[in-house]
Length: 202
Image (cartoon, rainbow, N blue to C red):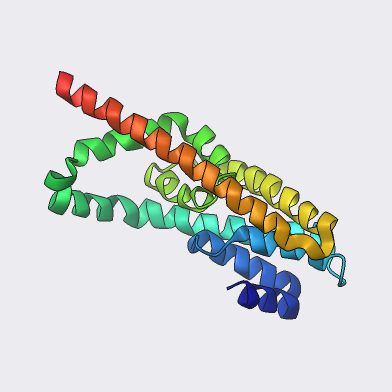
């Protein structure tokens, strides 16, 4: 995959970076770390500038986030409710649980959207519950843009600073991703335990 990503960036420059970052938000398996760090490296080998790479990558990321936001708004809730209707007895979920999760997101939506921009995979997925909760679109855009801009700036500068060793940064980001996934898994387990205990008490 890395060869394909670098090929597009080498041949299409800023437009290629914008396209890849939009795609990365919609299809999370595409690693933004590769796009951003290699983009930073390219600023030392081509006419591309650090500011240009940061702006084009941020534009693509925000564009992809908006697409997922509206997907969540118009499709997410209905599809999830259908799944719960069919498999809820196995998953021990019902529509009330979905409503509660939406209420939780509405309560902490600003923190959730901003902080998740720094967590691989979640930085893309978080746009869907934001749309499902009908989060204020302007607030969503501001938080998404700020969080994404910080993430992109750090990785582009790292790629530019290490030059030809940009893949080293990708390796460190892989470790960072695993640590963050571990933390998220732990948080999810704690939340599940809390929910089960609350249901038993009722």
